[in-house]
Image (cartoon, one colour):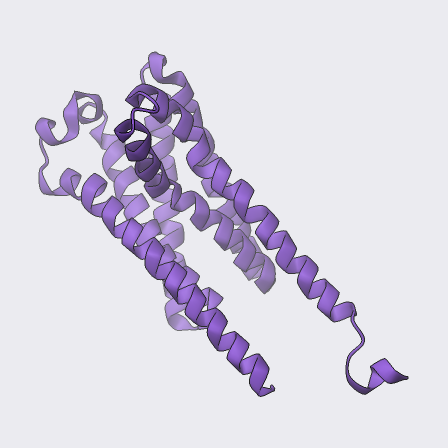
Length: 226
């Protein structure tokens, strides 16, 4: 490895760490504002009537989401900075457990939602489906030692995991600036909080592949002069 490559790799790891740190701040805000009170104050006043009657699904959904968003954040940093080892594998199991619990409970929340919130419920159902599919593909890829595929599917999976924080961040902005009512914001974001980030992520993943392929196709070193 030459010095320029090592420097570029170090700079890349610094950038990744900064992005993960920013995501960590957002995740901490989300957990503190939207999750902790369900476990600290177990009462109808904390849950509201809307959630109290369905707390049997909400609690595991929140717990699974908490496991996934915290373990997954460390996983993403470990994976993108090539720190693959026992901790990475252990946290991978924690992450998958969180996704499984959160998505199954999410299905319950989606199918028991009042009919007037059908758009929101269908968005939650689709989110849980995408959550399971992307995480399952990441597991299948790593079991077949397809490391690049595993990394890409994990990025897609965590994009969906982080959709819960994205939902609340954008909802606060939309309602705070009176751009949308709470009901309209919920209906829009039930779909947009995960589909739009996935739509942004996918071209970035494909551009990375194209650049790597282009570099691999270029003649290098002494062979370029022959």
